[in-house]
Amino acid sequence: MIKLNNVTKVYKGTVVAVRDVTVDIAKGEFVFLVGPSGSGKSTFIRLLNREELPEHGTIYVAGRDIGTLGAWRVPFLRRNIGFIFQDFKLLPKKTVAENVAFALEVIGKPRHVVRKQVPAILELVGLAAKMDNFPHELSGGEQQRVSVARAFVNRPPILLADEPTGNLDPQTSVGIMKLLDRINRTGTTVVMATHDRSIVDTMRRRVIELDQGVVVRDQARGVYE
Amino acid sequence: MALSPRYVLRETGQNLWRNVLSSAAAIITIGVSLWLFGGFFLFNYAVDNATARWEGGIEFVVWMQPEATAEQDANIRNSIEGSPAIKEWVYVDQNQAYEEFREIFSDTPELIEVVSPDVLPPSYRVVPENPDADVVSELSDQFVGRPGVEEVVSADQTIRDIQRLADKVTRVFLVGSVILLTAATLLILTNIVSAIRSRGAEIEIMKVVGATNWFIRVPFMLEGLVQAVMGAMGAWVGLRILDDTVIKGLSEPDSLQLMQGFRVDQGEFYSTSLLVLVIAIVVSGIGSAVAVTRYLDV
Image (cartoon, rainbow over all chains, first blue to last red; front, side):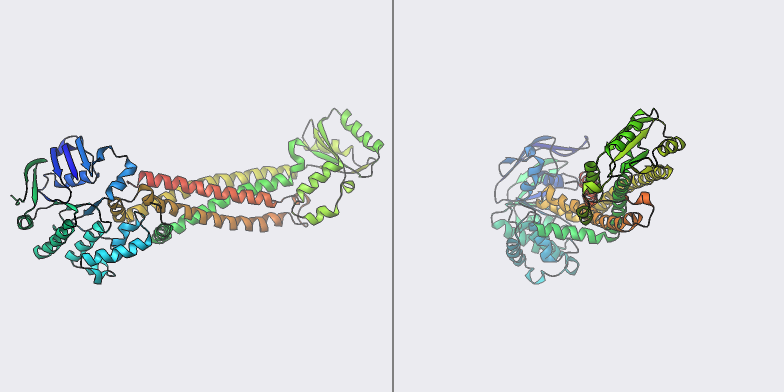
């Protein structure tokens, strides 16, 4: 599903964010990216979403070399990749339902599809009763659930999460992880950058550890360190 | 996937409403600049129509009586041809006079219906060697009262003054409109940039979920177009008022005789209106294109 071959990303010609990374992630896998701040986790994720292009190496997503995609095709790649932010990035003037619907509207989904899929995904994340609330009326955990719903409403085969529990307390984080685990069980590939030791140790999924941009560990059913 | 009209209209409407004051400023600026631009054309048309007979250096016209005999006509023609003070001349026969009449009074078909070529006087339009007012006056006086001559009319200093004044007025209109149109373009650009910045979070989400570049850009471009078209509509109303009050007022029967041809026909008015709309679209296109290509990173 995702394949990186000798990928190197350098910022401003000198700062090496990712160095000679080769990783293969199968369809339906759940992968934790761990490592200290500045180790290259976020860059790794941004490379998969083609927000960044590598200086060297190739990246395949769903069998396609995304480095050779024309700019006009990048949006179509991103429709196959859900993205969850650490800080939720919900639109404050839109309700929960509108925030989720927005992700479908802007890729041109017809109204009847939006009307059908939004309540269904809000049901999945446990927020059906709060679809008319605004983000400021929700707890942090609920806001992140909305963010997950927005990322998954289009049922993408890949979900990227950049420290999705970074702004949440441990108990709320567990709820979010259960949700991501549930989504993963539908066959969705999940790649999640995290600093949360307890989550990684509890879930025992594949762990890729980065240090100064280099993969120093790639362990099936791994722990944080 | 296609752009949803409902989505585009909603987003464009929201953008305009969020920046309602600066949108109003842009619309007013565009309206005033296009009004000046259109006014430039209307005044030019009106002056051209009022002084059509005096174009090409024609300084006086010898109007013949419609019933003048061939001998009387030949006498006048011989005098004109033989005069070393006359540089060139044009004879306008009754049919040509009728065509000219039809053109001048194209807005009043009822008048055209009651006039036929045989009641209109033929004329000699004369360009003297020396356009000095005294010389022209002395030359034209030679034809006054001669057999077959109805009237001799000179393009006196007043007409020349009007042409010069009109030149200055229209130049002010043109320069003013160009300056204001530049300001309007910058205002549209600023408004769109401001809308782009205020919607930074939305744009980020749109990019992440896979909205196409055009899907992101179109509502902003449409915002500029709506402002420009609303400005053009305001300018059109202003031009209508200008035509109905100032221009028609100047050409009323009780005004100066030489101003009575000061008019704009419907074709000229609508071609000016169309031009104003096209300029509005061009202005909004430039402002929007610069804004979305330079300030919207998609």
